[in-house]
Amino acid sequence: MHIDKSFFAQHTVEVAKQLLGCVIIRHWQGQEVVVRITETEAYRGADDPASHAHRGITARNRTMFGSPGHLYVYFTYGMHHCMNIVTEPEHTPGAVLIRGAELIQGIEVVRHFRGTKVEDKNLLNGPGKLTQALNIGLEFNEYDLLSNDSPLILEVGAGNVSYQATERIGISKAKDYLWRFVTH
DNA sequence: TTCTCGATATTCT
DNA sequence: GAATATCGAGAAA
Image 1 (tube, chains in turn red, purple, orange):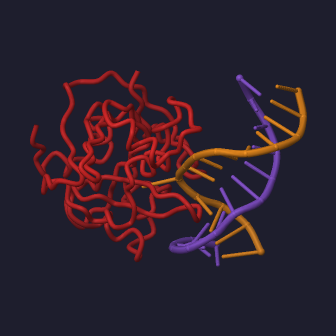
Image 2 (cartoon, chains in turn green, blue, orange):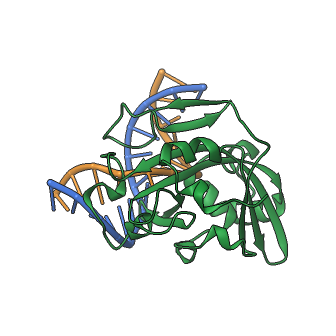
């Protein structure tokens, strides 16, 4: 189902909740991978000390200040990529980190990128694992999800999903923000 | 099952 | 020089 730009232009926390249950479709070399989002985190520059955008615009985070519905991909810890979806109106920084998903279709492609030794439950349960499984790199930074273009498509899920709100993972600031959302 | 630690580029102090 | 929106291997328990 089509997603409107106004969906992404909402408050980042709201988008993070509503992205749960949504489906990512990745086309790679004629094959299709389909995953369902199960874990997200909101990062809002304006009032969030843990956000990359909190101290202003830089070469890395400038996508967060751009158009809602774009992808914000960054390289971290010297070896991993993280995939976010840009939120809030243009010039207002915000993004939702996609932390985890469950596999619906395309195990062959996922195994190709994640390797054969990994257990099934560990294929997509982390932001770095997810980008590796879907072969998402910096070339996807600023990719427009609203274009509904072939390599990467986002579709809404079945509707309301029950979730739990917790502290975000791997941060030291703003630990009291319960801006991580996990499906039950 | 849980803990510790190394890898390693970019950003921050 | 230190920290980081991480992961996986190996050690400890």
